Image (cartoon, rainbow, N blue to C red):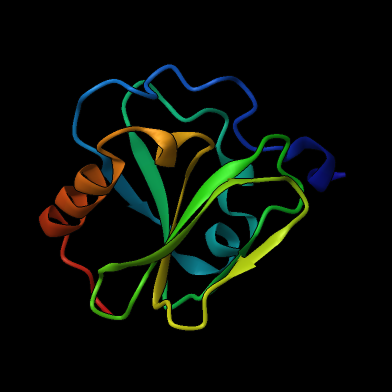
Length: 127
């Protein structure tokens, strides 16, 4: 069964706490939006996040590790976040217009907010 193989990035993230620009990948199309991080084999070697535009809720069904979720309002500003969201859970913020998914513990870094805001300013958000 295809769902049995989709577990998302299970290995620890090597770039947590390291400086460097955050890259934002956008989930496009039904498949990418439905499966989200479950399609990823790893987080990669440099900081990156998966963004869901026109979205106010996410789920972690099928993931094997917790994640951090950052909710953005319709203007692209951070309105809330959930740290260490466990597998098989749902998180939502009705005021959100987009959501970023990142590895667990990302939002516990000292300058995570600055890194996210810089990445968002470098990336033009289309509502």
